[in-house]
Image (cartoon, rainbow, N blue to C red; front, side, top):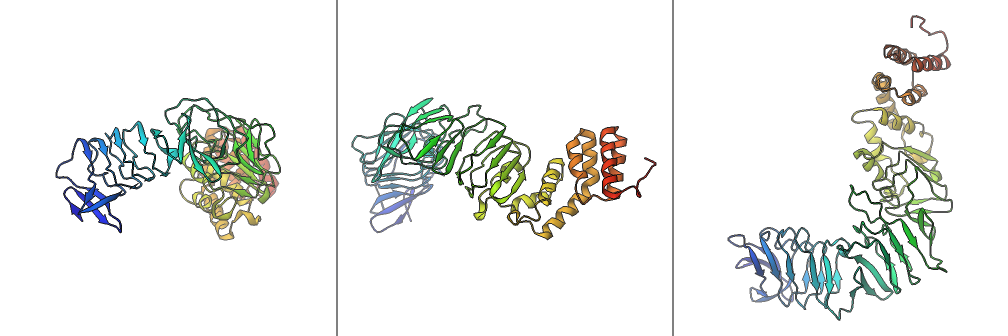
Length: 441
């Protein structure tokens, strides 16, 4: 239904403003109507002003509106001032995404603010709000269990923050985007830290390391902090270490979401005690090797920073498994097989007898076929680059035939790789004996 420039839908106690369709795109300021079709407006619907609101700089929502839905004012690019009514009870996720807002006054009647941790502008709360409060940096939500640290001021440049006494829980995205923040001091009242709370760096190109030091009060029994990591019981919440090899302590049973977010280590060794890994535990991790002790798996990954590596790191914890190899295997039998993928493929074939590896014989056969067909290219590439380790791995594959060795030896001879050629000659003798040796080489 439509009333003037506005579209709406009827509800039991009023209407939802669902669209804005003026004859020409308006500029400057706009006050939304308090009623449409003779009924009071109670709700601003998703994307209501997204299409024709890009030139509006100031928007006033009238009294009587109780709810602003997710994305209601999305992509109102020039919107720098938003006036909200005292009647408002709820703000939906990303209600003002893509606007020019730098601050917003939240009426004291607002009980719910969806996605508050990701809002890019500063919030000011009217006095008397029974749910929301702030200390100038942290934004707190009252609950029957105490105070939740729900978000932090996006304009702040705090490097150290002391979470006030009375806070019982820290939300997973409470510090998201606060890239200056490097040190936290936590209160005795704290009972829960949700997964992902310490991975505050969201800019992929930032040189900052994010939170690196967490302090708990004496007598705390729920959490444990070392220089390199933080535990909640037997769950590893976050690894802060910068070393090339991560050795997770034995006794840890679970790896939390974003635990190894942007971790620079080349190797991550998980002890047999780890039986649960969150799906987002290894987001943007740069490891080339992860060992899952409980499953007896030693999984190689591509070099850091590649699209393939990022995708493969997303498979931890999928479908109730510590690692789901579905996408991993698909990537090995399709597309270009380079030295990196060959290393992964050889390691994958070595897992055939391990039930946790989820490698069917039919898939293994397809892998062998791909590897066998590409052996000449792989040896040639190794000869050009001088990659002796790749030659070793390929020569040790049990699928190497006599003619494969002979072709590889010729390739090394052509490129002047004497050491590699000698190694292959020796491996050929060990694998197929002297009968097939071609002395013309």
